[in-house]
Image 1 (spheres, rainbow, N blue to C red):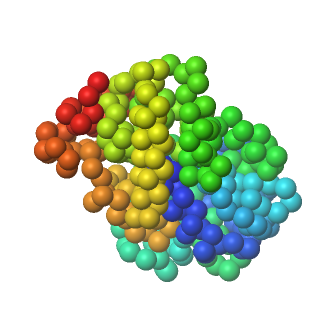
Image 2 (image 1 turned 45 degrees about the horizontal axis):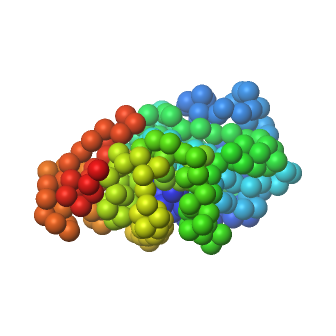
Length: 289
């Protein structure tokens, strides 16, 4: 699933390519992707002639702020990603006209294609069709996002604010930091990486974390997320940036999906444990419970 670094990488690409352009049409072969308004026909009618004023991210959501007080929100879910280029529809599938690398894996799963006023297209590729698309008032979007936790890379997200996130919280630290109402944007990959960097076992109860451990975790979270953005996200699964290129964070991971391989710090074999129905990778020597 695209996490904060992948979503931010997507937003950065969109900001460079589609700002101030206007939606003139949209196609889909899987209209269930649209959650609001009630029908795809309404969605298409309301989106037409809306200008893109701003593209930004909140947690794992991509938000296109549009003219007339509307916003287009896209959550890419498990296997979605947004691409910018030009395609033509023929024989039931989209073929690239002006697009970077040609990947059958990408072009075979285009389930929504937006056309802009200059001929550029924004395509939503999603193998599992779990992505969410909503076109609602900007006010409604902001209200819906208000329940999310603070942004971990925000300059206002101080260590003191981080500590407050754990006040009266219970549970295993891995699950807590992945809770989007606690801290926004952290998913399975970067949670595992941050906990390894901070030398904290993923199953440790948050109530037992010392101030020193909390400070280490605070620094580790911000470091791995910033690194993820620097290297364009992780593409071990389906994620691609708007040009269709894979992120290169895969080669920077210290622990995620490295079960059985030696820890880069102490050489002990990395282990995997299931925490909250998700695989978590850790070093049993560096990250003692």
